[in-house]
Image (cartoon, rainbow, N blue to C red; front, side, top):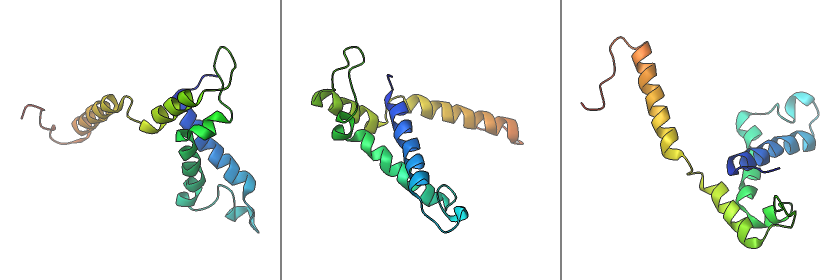
Amino acid sequence: VLLSPAQLTTLYHEMGHALHALLSRAPSHHFGGLRVAQDFVEAPSTLMERFVSHPAALALWATHLHSGRAITPRAAYAIARAASAGGFGRAIRLQLDAANAMLDLHLHSASPPPSATE
């Protein structure tokens, strides 16, 4: 399966939740797994996301899409850099967020927001 850097990060993140739930031991199910404080629920997932940007972790399982050969160290490094950069499309997302904020202000304010030229 071919995964984008964002999908790879999501996969590792969700694997962190799964490992947390599987490995939790608590006297009551109300205090283990995913039933803990929100900050602690995200700790294993955030930790797992760090492995996306580590070439050695990719080399353990990643293979070439067509040939099935193990990933080269150079390719693993390139994928890790792309996954950890997080900058792909950042400017477009920022513009979309700004446009959505302006629309929200327009729809829910008594007076319209100032224009971009003011």
